[in-house]
Image (cartoon, rainbow, N blue to C red):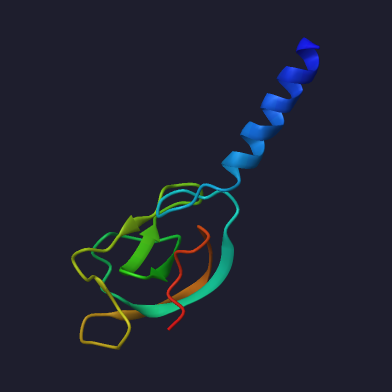
Length: 98
């Protein structure tokens, strides 16, 4: 009986973890292409994505995403900015679709 309770509890925990999402947490998510321009302020980036409230980036795989509050990433070309793009694994429901 106790094995059944432990097994059921463990399965519930695993399923609930798969539902978590939000900037900075990767628990599955979506693979999306990103495209923009960057001024290298934060140094090299690993990947990023356009969220509903701005650009999120990370420097290394497995690192939490950080929001670019200072606008060092832009959608349009500008003096001092270079093109960045690729694919990113992002949390479910955080990608700007517009």
